[in-house]
Structure formats: C-alpha cells, structure tokens
Length: 294
Ligand SMILES: NC(=O)c1ccc[n+]([C@@H]2O[C@H](COP(=O)([O-])OP(=O)(O)OC[C@H]3O[C@@H](n4cnc5c(N)ncnc54)[C@H](OP(=O)(O)O)[C@@H]3O)[C@@H](O)[C@H]2O)c1
Image 1 (cartoon, rainbow, N blue to C red):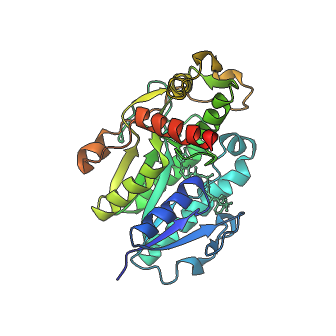
Image 2 (cartoon, rainbow, N blue to C red):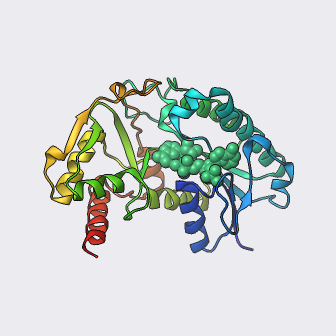
C-alpha cells in the first residue's frame, strides 16, 4: 500500500511544495486549502474544524503547514490569529491523536528570544512576538501529548525559481533592473531552500525519526549580507543593497535580532547536506538571469 500524507495548508509556499514532492516520490497525498481554492484540494478552515476531516486517515502522516504566518497580522489581530494558530491547530492535533495520525508540525525560529542565535533543539524557548508565542503553545501541546511526532523548526525558507513569489527571487528581479533593495543589517537568520524542506521532511519520515529538529543550512547571516552576496552573484553593484535596521521600519511589533538555528542534529543523524547559501544564491542568479534573457 502507498504511504499516505495529508498536507494541511496545501496552498502555502511550503505546503504546495510538499504536495508536489511527495506525489513525485510515489506517496498518496491529500492537501487542504482555506481561502485559495485549488483543484483537487479539500477545504479546511482551522477556525471551524470538522472532525470528518480525519476519517479514513488512520496510520497516515499529516504535515501541519497551515497558519496565519504574517507576523504583523498575528500581533494586530491576536484573537483571530490565536483561533487559527493555537485553538484550531490544537483541535486538529487532537483529531490526529484520536485517529493515530503521525503529526509533522512546522514551527519557527521565532520561538527563541533572538538574543544570541545558533539555537539548538533543546535550548530554552522564550518568544518575544505574538506569532512566536502562538507557535510555542502548539509545540508545548505536542511535546506533552504525543510520543511519535516530528516538530520541525524551519529557518527562513527561500525559493530558487524565477518569479516563484519568494522574497529573494523578487530581490533578484529588482537588482537585475538596477533597482535598490532595503535589507536589515541587524537581523540574522538561518536559511533553507524550499526544495530542501520537502526533501528533509521526507527523509525524516522515511527513516522513522521522531522528535524536534531544526531545518536550516549551516550558514546564518543578516538580510543585508545576504543581499550583498546576491548582488555579487548577479554581478550588480553592491551599493544597490541598502542597509536598514529591522526595528526602524515602522513595524508595530519589535522583531528579534538573531534567531538563527543550529542544524547539526539533522545533518548528523541523516547525513543529508542541505543546499549551501552560495549554491542557493547561484541558482537564483542563474534562474533570474536566464529569465531576463528570454
Ligand atoms: N516560509 C517560511 O520562511 C517559514 C519559516 C519558518 C516556519 N514556517 C512555518 O511553515 C508553515 C508553512 O509556511 P508557509 O510559508 O508555507 O506559509 P503560507 O505560505 O503563509 O501558507 C499558509 C497556509 O496556511 C493556510 N491557512 C491559513 N489560514 C488557515 C486557516 N484558518 N485554516 C486552514 N488553513 C489556513 C493557507 O491556506 P490558504 O492560502 O488557502 O488560505 C496556506 O495554505 C507555517 O506554519 C509557518 O509558520 C515557515
């Protein structure tokens, strides 16, 4: 029998990539949408969850890639975002537990305080944003209630295909047209290529891993440094990357400055090498350069 996967949030950046990747690898995949209908996907709103969703899913895996991911929105609409990111997600996880569905929960580096970076899986979590606190609550529920689970904290996910709607390829498009981009010099993150997220999750599931893992390639850097390196790969002037400070951009909620994750546990246990930052930037430069030359 084919292995079965439910992707909750199948229309999202990560969810859509997971659906494609697992299907290509021969899995039977169901995906859900909330506000953006897509052919073949099932409607699911975490704010009004129906128990029938899990019927027939016994023994399957389910990736929870659904959330209100806009950090500012979580702050400005704490009750509404809580209904989805905490209450609805925990209700979904309870249904999974009742049905014997194996949960794979996508969490964030924002569960950490962001004062030093290089956080390991077992480090103390002390989120400073509403979004980070919501994610931590769900993490706590999983850690308390499940024995078999994957709780995956992702670095910032970056696409490497032209016009994929992700921020680095949008930066590349602007830089190629000699338009400047503003990037925070004081906010440091870890990064992971979108294609690697799906590969890493499949590897963890297929090797029957359980527990908390950080998914990030080895190198962390500030957004501005990333922008400067992208300029080099695109062979455009580095002055097009204009430095700014994240908490001087008029955001309503203060952002943590260094939430970068340590990915050694995943690398050590799976021997999987995630795409390096230079390879990611090279791919983007090639994809966006080729696009421009069409
Ligand atoms: N992308 C990153 O850099 C990153 C980094 C760290 C962690 N993560 C985590 O990874 C997960 C996926 O991220 P992403 O970037 O793919 O997010 P995304 O592109 O914003 O997608 C969010 C998904 O959640 C669904 N959703 C939103 N509200 C919902 C609701 N009320 N009920 C059910 N589904 C709902 C959306 O469905 P519709 O579009 O159909 O409304 C969409 O499929 C998130 O949990 C995020 O916290 C992402």
